View 1 (spheres, helix red, strand yellow):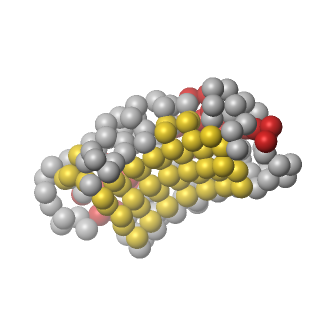
View 2 (spheres, one colour):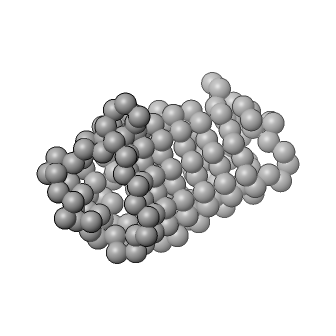
Length: 167
């Protein structure tokens, strides 16, 4: 949908493409467990952070510059952040023990994966550049702490130290 008013009453899964302020009222959708959000600015993200039942959050075309609001989602199991040009680091990463899968795609300003090492409970991780622009990171060493990892997806990723030893 393109407006909160189009979301059926009692919906648990919502796919919302923000057009100007069409996201206003998302915070009232208290039963939503899975949200696919497109065009996520800072205001939209603040509304999303009020959805305490969210387990799966997919955000694409993210113009928000601070993603720390995802830490307010206590049941978050899966987080995808696709196309986030204003994000320069991963210090905002959610620390919920419920988080099992994380995808970061086309966030070309991120070069340090060190904060990933704190997410030792992850079972799935995707770190990738865009189709045409590689994501350039210093090292894969932080991934060596992810002992429960079962799935790793890396596409169009350039590693400065050129080492796969951490894997």
